[in-house]
Amino acid sequence: MKLHLSNLGPIKHGEIELGDNTLFVGKPSTGKSTAMRALFYSLYCPGRLIQLRGDPLEVRDTSFFQRFSIDRKKTKKIYMNFIRDSLPEGKFKLEPINVLDFVLTQKLSYKEEYKPISLPPMYFPKICNNKDIERLRYSLSNTIYEIGVNGDEGEVEVKADISDVNETCLKDRRTLSSLSKAFMEIAQERISSQYCIGFNELLRDRGINGVVYIPYGRSFLALQKFIMQEILDSSRFSLGESDLPFIIIRPNYLKKYYRGLSTYNEKIFNLIKPLLKGQVIDLGKKLVYVEEDKIIPWEYVSASVLEIVSFLLSVKEGSLVLFEEPETQLHEELQLLMGVVLYALSSFNRIVISTHSQTILYTIAHLSMLRPTKEELKDLFEDLKVKDYEALVEAVEKANQKEVKVKIYYFTEGEVKDVSVDEAVKGMPGTIDVLEKGLKWLSSLHSKRLFGEG
Image (cartoon, rainbow, N blue to C red; front, side, top):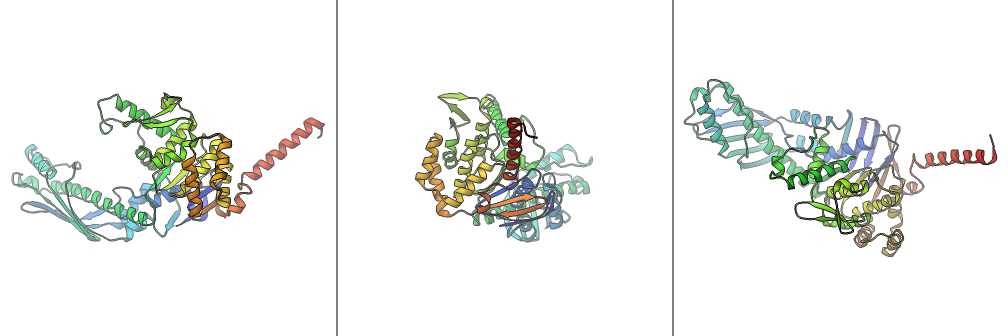
C-alpha cells in the first residue's frame, strides 16, 4: 500500500510505501504523527458514516413505508468533518484501498429484518395526545424494520399497529417528519454498519485484521481504564451504567483507543515478557501487576511498566499497528528490547512506528540486515540478564524466515525521504549529526578547560 501526501500540515509532499515494518524518523514537528493519522483514517471505518436522503413517508394500513437514496456527497462531507479534529487541512490518499473511496464507489445490495434496541428521540405536535404518543412509541419499539438497499437506492418498511392512533395526529406533517427522521437514522446506522463490514472484509483479504493506533499518552488512558475497573469492581453498577472518570470529547482516535483497551493476547504477552520485571495476571474481571509475589496497584507501578502494559492491551494479532514513539518512558535497555519486539511482531502483524530513538531504529535496521540466529539472540538476552525470552527468539526467527520488508522514511523540511536500511545503520538522519555537533562542542570545552586554549 502507498500513502500519498500533499500540503498536509508540515508535509508539502510525500509518498510512503508500507513495508512489513515501517519507521517514520525526523525532527519534531515534521509531520510524522500527521502521516500516521492519515494512515489510520484511511483504514478506519467509523459508524454512522453513510447519509441517506429520504422520500416522503407513506402511511399504509398496517405499516410505514419510505424510499431513500444514498447521499454520497453528504457522506463525504460527514467523513471530512469526522477527521477534521485530528488532521490539518490538506490532501492524502492511500492506494489501492481506503475507506472513503470504498463508501463512495461501492454499491451495496442487502436486505435485513432488524429490531432496534432503542428508538431515536421523536417529537410530536400538540395535536397528539399522550395516548397517541405512547401507542406509537410502543408499536415502533416492538416491531421489525425491513431495510433493503440495491445500489444507490433503498427502502424501509415498518409494520406497526397504528389503528388506535388518532388520524389527525398520525398524518400531521410534524409527526411524519419526526417519524421519517427516526426511520432514516435507524437505516443509516444499519447501512453504515454493512459498509464497514464490507470494508473490513476487504482489509482481511489483504491480511490486515483491523487497524490499531497506539497514540502518545496511552499510559494515562490505560491507567484510567484500570482505575475505572476498580471502581466498578467495588460497585453494584456495570460499565454501561456508570459514568467514566473523564469524558474524551476529541480527538476521536483517543476515544477509539480507550474503548479498545481490553484483555491481552497471549501471543503478544509472551513476546513482551522480557521487558517486564514482574507479571501481568488476569484474575478474570481485572488485570493485576505482580512483582516478587506482591500485587502492586497500577497507580504505583513504574512509568515504563505502564507503557509496556498499555502496548500489550492495544495490539491485536494480525492487525496493522500504528505506534507513536514506542520509546516513551523506556530506558535504553528497554528501547533495545522494544526494537526486537517490534521486529518480531512483523512476523504476524504489520507495524508502522514514529520514533526519535536511535536505539530502536538501529535495532530494527540491523535485525533486518543481519538476521541473527537463535543462538546469537540468546547471547544478547543472556548478556542483558533478561528472562522468558524464548517466544521472542522464535518470533524473530519467523520474521527472518519471512524476510520482513523494513521501510524507513525521514521527514524533513516539508518532504518525506525514503532512507535505505544500509543508510539507517550508519545513523539516524537529524540525530547523528546533532550528536556529532554536541560532542565536538563538548570536546572543545574540554580542551579549553584542560589546556587553557581560546
